[in-house]
Image (cartoon, rainbow, N blue to C red):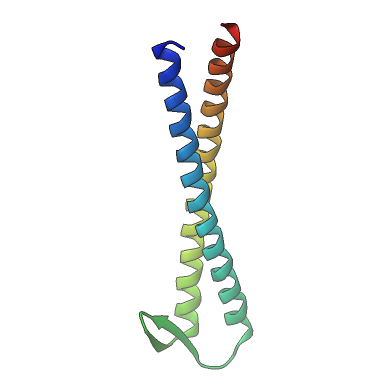
Length: 109
């Protein structure tokens, strides 16, 4: 196997590592997104006092401001997830092209 093919295999491994990292980040953001959606849903159902956790303490909060804060957080998470999806797609495509190139070189020998 020549040096160029070895470098391409290393690059392919790097793509796979980046893809795995993106998928882990995406999963964490998806979990947080679901938590925020659930919190918003529960918050909209209540007419009682609301509290939020800040660090290790519970603080009484205004329902409207908490709803606004959670909606903003949800928007940010949605943007981040879209960005990660885009990165994942791009890296997957690059990885697939490189994989095909490496396989054709290896099989061509």
